[in-house]
Image (tube, rainbow, N blue to C red; front, top):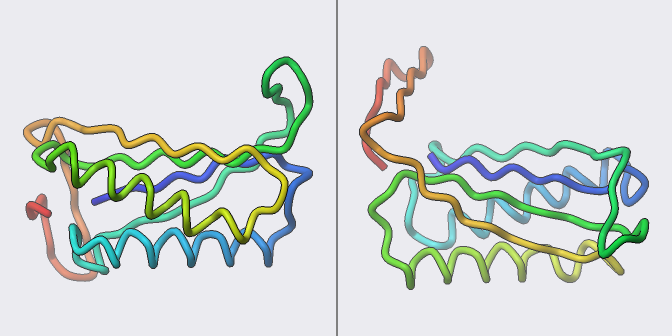
Length: 121
């Protein structure tokens, strides 16, 4: 926990650029102090068909899913940190960040490398 899912307009970037974005998003989440680094999961999904305000405009949207229990101030600070991490790297794209709380009681996790199972973050 958390999961940071980066959706972006497919024509905006190639593989190496996206890897830089993912590293920046990961660093911002870790720097927040809210999560152990080993629990941060970041991935990207290119979007081929999209509209922003009715037009084809480049975009990046990050959905940050985390277990409930963080304060509004913590969620706002995380959202702003992720936004700032991408602003200088993305160029002329609309960037949005959304923090979504997941109910901790219904979240299941298993990590075979660490033997971890549903450890709270």
